[in-house]
Amino acid sequence: MTLFKTTTSAAALIALALPALADGELNLYSSRHYDTDERLYSDFTEQTGITINRIEGKADELLARMQAEGANSPADLLLTVDTSRLKRAKDMGLLQSIDSATLEGKIPANLQDDDNQWYGFSQRGRIIFYDKAGITNPPATYMDLADPAYKGQVCIRSSTNTYNQTLLASIVTHEGEEKATAWAQGVVDNMARAPQGGDTDQLRGIVSGECGIAVSNTYYFARAIRKDVKGVSADIDKIGVVFPDQDGNGAHMNLSGGGVAAHAPNKDNAIKFLEYLASDSAQVYFSNGNDEYPTVAGVELAASVKQLGEFKADDVNLSDVAQNIPTAQKIFNTVGWE
Image 1 (cartoon, one colour):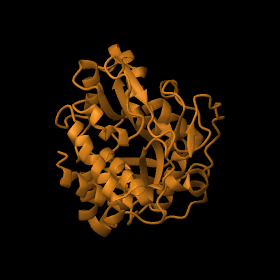
Image 2: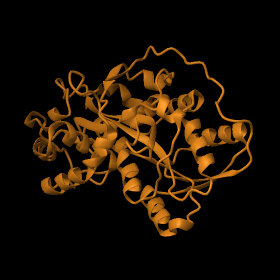
Image 3: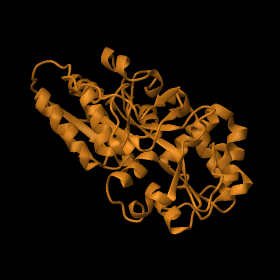
């Protein structure tokens, strides 16, 4: 199991192990929508001389575009968030297997595709938050969220949310379809309101008193520590944090990752960029710039992320989890999770 510690010593920012400045370009299709990623792109160009041409949009739109473009697609690289979308891209034939000793050596095996078609470069814990004043005995595990004791207390996003799809798929992987279905039904029965909004809205629900318990990714909470987030930061001390399953599998982690496009005209440059994302300098920036957890071991965490404390992360193979995403969607439909 991976243990994220607040005491991680700062890793020396080593120079990127790439060849001397190279000519060329990279056509990047990205659904990551964070302004802080600008630093990642500019640093790569400065270090390699490779110009990055970006096409940005929602993940499903980019996948549809790549599929429509077919063998004539200019895309070299796809960056997106969550295992479910990476799996979808692979299943659609939009990615290709690559050979990189750097990626194999730096990215943990459970955070990369079994066929080397995608790799994870940053992580977010999908964990439990609660109202410190109203909930005296918060859930300690994901399964606890279905406990009737929390009826009318739970706020969580819709079944169309990729983070929830992957979370349920991980429960299927660990517990089997029958128990996962019972869990999903229990969560629906315990909802404080119909699913609505994003992860930050679930945290706002705790502050407003509408939700006693919420499920959200860690980086939304860490961001509210680092800077002012309306409806959360001013009352953040009201919100308690639980990393679930610390006596079991550990907290579920979802990924931001990428892979080389199936028909990449600049394949070598695409691989260089993926290897750059696994460098210490880029990994530190994922944490400092967007409050995420690195995937490479030994990298210093941002101060906002450290404040969440130490925890054990689930080291389940996310390729296995990805295979259960269709089952998760079927379960959502069965139990009426909107």
